[in-house]
Image (cartoon, rainbow, N blue to C red; front, top):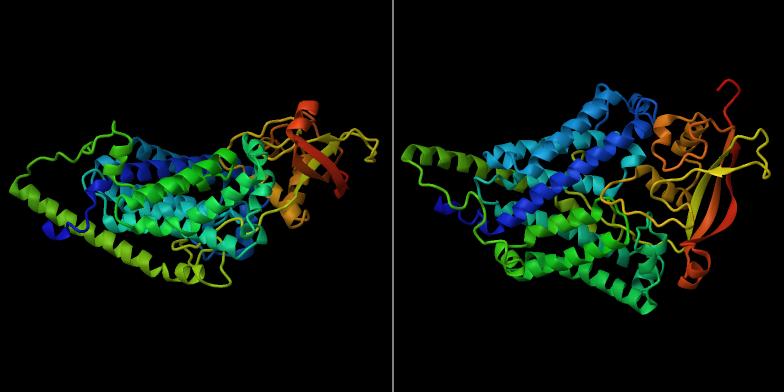
Length: 495
């Protein structure tokens, strides 16, 4: 229909493919992470059991399939269903049908993962959880190969990138002085939650380069997002800058799927002609439905009715998301800007932001156990090894993102808040029991499945070794003992 030409954006077909398949891939990773970690962290015998959480709050106000009943078996079924649906979208199967099919597939991912997040407590209290939920809901309305991408949905995805980037930029300007005096990157690569294999090299770069990094960050987050709404090719250039800066963060750290989501969402502003100009191997008319056929009159009428119905659904979703944008806009320009907050139970129209202040020192909590009866300093204390957080001083940090190691992330927060967290004492108790699901979350159990008599927590100051120190010792980290954070604990008799 000619009167709907404004609604169609056929020149963004490549963007749609990247958005649908890419975000489905992140959903797959998120469900896989939950399948592997949720039962030990939050399951029936987890550190913060969901049944206890539900019993304490009665029926939750936030929607979740587990409101009526939780079991580890049901949780795993939800994860497997989510991974299965996500895999079909990655393969492009729902996109072959009418637009209702990928719509229902993405809404199913959104509802299934929201069910997990809403009972995930502190282990799911990260901004990228709500980012994935909101992105999954919006991308659901991108349609299928039988319809051109809807322009309003692409604009809303660009608006999501704007909130993500500009919100992070504003929280930094309003936050620690280190962002304003350009010294934040003197510390960040070293003190970030989970360094990657290149984090030390990034930290050891000259300080003038770190100042350039901060200036580049301010430009990318405070100036560039406005150009996502500019005419082509400016919007594609703006998206390219976002993608480039996010790739630098991917290379120098482990922020679960936060950076990958920003990269994928930025493609909402990248048009097919720009893609073809950058990568000539990708043709302008590669979309399988672009050629089309000449339908008969009956099929045309049916198709027209379906297109009208689809237009109405997309416009209703657009109006809903525009209305929900009022609170995020208000928050962006508030002196009391909230970071990573949702204003409704469906986690749509959220506000985002990260690292308003940068930690200047890296304090790590090491967990140790001993088989000795007397837990004094002469005992044979052995340290548990975590998968992602720093421990052994010679070990190269691994690249985990977009996979999310939830226990390791929470361990980073402990010294910033308090070690006397309910979940951490539950974790120590599980180590005393040699609980196998808990031990599987770790990289190394020094007792090979045996029960330690005592466990304790000690704090250390960590910093990256200089090049000279590394050549002399082979250590990538220098660590200095600070104090005993939690004295030796044991199970009660008969425990």
